Length: 480
Image 1: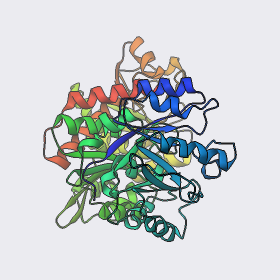
Image 2: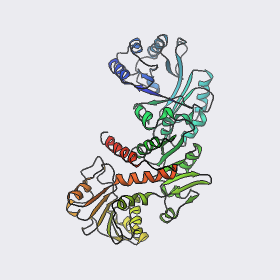
Image 3: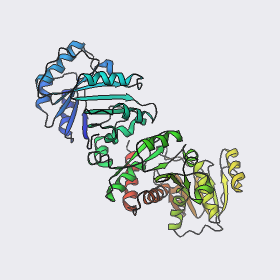
Image 4: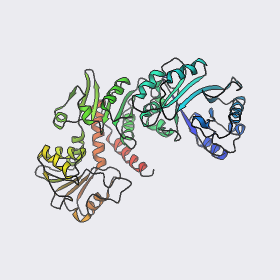
C-alpha cells in the first residue's frame, strides 16, 4: 500500500495558448497534459515549456477523450512525446501499442477507463494490463454504489504501482483517500466525474500528508455534493493537529454505510437524510436522548461496535441558550413538518415551550401532533408567537428573495431560520428590520459540528475555525 500519494494537476485546453497558460498556472509537482482536445497541437512546443514533470495524455474518443483524428495520427503524436522524453505517457490498454517507440526517460501508464459501468470482467482486464508490466497500471471505472469502492480496492490490491479511481459521487473516497487504494497518484481538476480541485486535495483534504495511519471520518447520506461538513471538519482536524481526514460517503442505504465504514475502518461519521432511522437501528449503543427521539445523526466506532448519538437537538438549542433565551412558557410556532421540524418540536417541548406546527402539508403536521401532542395551526401562521422557527427550504440559495411567509406576518420577539445558505435569509432580514432577534441556521450547523468533533476526537472543538470555514463555504457556494 502506498503511504503517500502525489497530486496530479490536470491541464486541459483547446489551443496551445490555453495549454501553456495552464502549465504556467499549475502549482502541483506533477502535471497531466490532456492534449487530445488541442486544435493546434505542437507536442515539442508544449514539452519545451514544461517546468515540472508531466504525464502526456492524448485520449482516444473511443475511451472518453476528444481526439477526433485517425488512430495512426494519434499514436504518432504519442510516439513523438515518448521520443522527446516526456516523463510519463498515458496509453489506453485497448490501443495498439506495438509501433510505439521506447525511451528510458519515459514511463508508461497503461490505463483503462469505463465512464458508464464497473465492468463485470474488470479483474480480467487488470490482469491483462499487469501481464505487460507497465510502469503504472491505472483503472478508472464508474461507481454505481458506495460498495464499489470496496470492490475496486480489493481488485487493485497487488504489488505494483497503480492508480485506482471510482468515478462519480460514490467514488469520492478513491480521490481524496488514495492511500486506501494503494494509488500513487490522485488527479485534481474539473474534467472528470467526481474530481476534486487541486486546492481542495492539497489544502482541505491534505492528501499529500495523509497515509494509512490517518483516521477517517465522514458524512453519510444522499445527496452530499453541497454539504458544508467536509469544509468545516477538515480545517478543524488540521487546527487540532490531528492526523485525520473527513470525506463524503454517498449512500441512501444504511446497511451499505456500515459495510463500507467497516471495510475502511471509518472512525466516525455524521449521518444525514435518509439514513438516520436506519443507522439508529444498527448501532450497538445510544444515549437516552437518541432513544427518546428514535434517530441519530452521529456514529462512532468503539471496541464493542458502533455507538450513536443525536446532536440535532443540542445543536438546535445551543444558539437559543447562547442568547439566554428562556423557552419555558414561550409560544413557539414551527413552520414545516419534516425531519428538521420534528427535531425542533422535540427540542422546544423538552424545554417547556408551548409548540404549534404550521405546514402546507396538513397531514404531516397532524402526524407531529399525534406524536408530540402539539397544536396544528393554519398555514400561514398568524402573528402572536414569541418564537418562529422555519424548517422549510424556502429562501435557500439561489432563491434568496423567497420567504416562507409574507413580511406582514413576521411580527414577534425572535425568528430562527434553519437555512444556512445564505447566512441571512429574506425572512431573517425582515425580522431584523422589524426589531426581532434573529438566529440563522449557520449557528446550529456549527454547534452540531463542534459537538460531533468533540465526541469523536476527545479534543476541544476549534469553534472559531469551524465557524469561519462554514462562512467561507457559504460564500464560495454563492459564487458557483
